[in-house]
Image 1 (cartoon, helix red, strand yellow):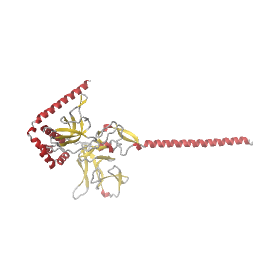
Image 2 (cartoon, one colour):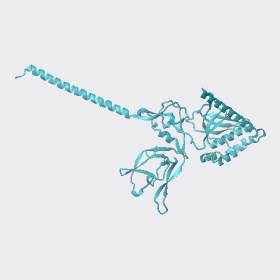
Image 3 (cartoon, rainbow, N blue to C red):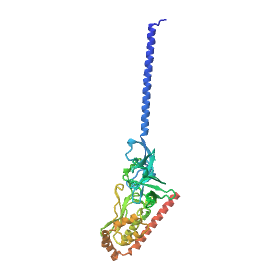
Image 4 (cartoon, rainbow, N blue to C red):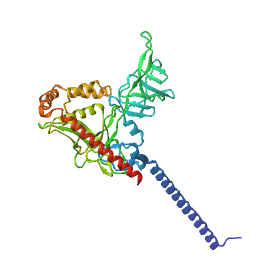
Length: 415
């Protein structure tokens, strides 16, 4: 039966319309899929751009020691993170450790190391290729190795080549002592190298805030500096014979100075963080606590005794205005020969402290003492009879402060 031209036209129009609709829908679906994929990719890029960083969970002052309890893990997009931002706690752990010479302890994928030359190079094999780790922590392939150059011991594989600025550090699990490995040779005839332990001292050094920072600040290494090495002879000392600045607060850094009636003024100990005991809710008016090494304790004792003996002499503290950026001053107080002798013979004084003392005890400093301080001490009115009374006065002050402190603790416990 022949089709009606009108029906045929309508049918064709319907088919064309359906085809167009299908094409439009396909285009729309394809566009939507493209947009969804684009959104998904953008979301994945955004998620991939986030990094873990460590921020402060409290405000800190310039010169304040940064400890792990002051840090919190946060996430931020990489474009908002400063260069050299700290992303792991290892940064704080490793940067707060040094050897006795002040070399920092770092870490990479293979463990910890010091930035100082080593007489051998550790290598690691992977798919018949050898790699080492550079001082920046990056892995680098080592080429041109002959098999007779490679040696293996219980600690791993190594080459007898200088590893520039990288000495691997190990720690014994049982004793928790640190050691490095030194090359030795079996005999004069047998030049096969082996490695033996050499124990080293690893010391803690605090990280100091160079600038004042607010809570949630992303920390970078440029914001931090290493404080002085915390040696084994450091003790918390209490003093009440020091004249304190009016606005002194716990956490401030000070130099302790002694000024003689001749006008001469010397630094006894430098850049010490002070803690002020709180009694009955109030800061003590005349007592401070400081962490001092053995030689610094003896230096303070020498200065205090001489201040008691010489009328018109005062021991006072001066504050650092920006302790995070300001370097510690060099002590200039010329110690008495008796104190120097005591420090040098004291087994509790470290070798580092003794060397610093020898550097200070120059002929010029000895002349200053002989020509000025000793002359004052020899005057009749400045005899040693002043000392017992002044010491007793200091003891009474300490006892009174201690009594108030214990009473404040008792009151707090009963409230």
